[in-house]
Length: 65
Image (tube, rainbow, N blue to C red; front, side, top):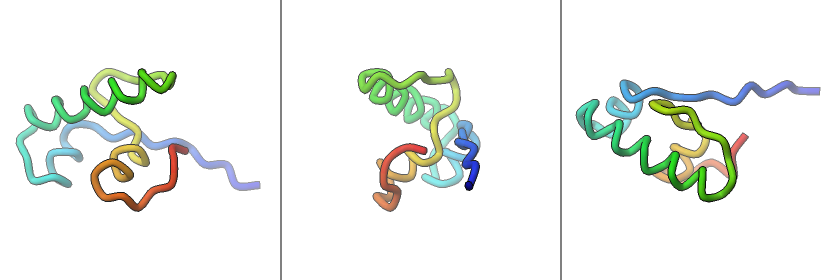
């Protein structure tokens, strides 16, 4: 059995991946966390699920792990 630990990413990595400022990255995280909360998921301020981020921005992840 594979034990997958969900990964969370912070504003620094979001900023780097998208080529934006850290301030803008915090806005991205806030919006993604709002979407997740509306779907009933728990969120962590200042961090976002790496899988969800990649799915929404790059479209290559199937669901949240």
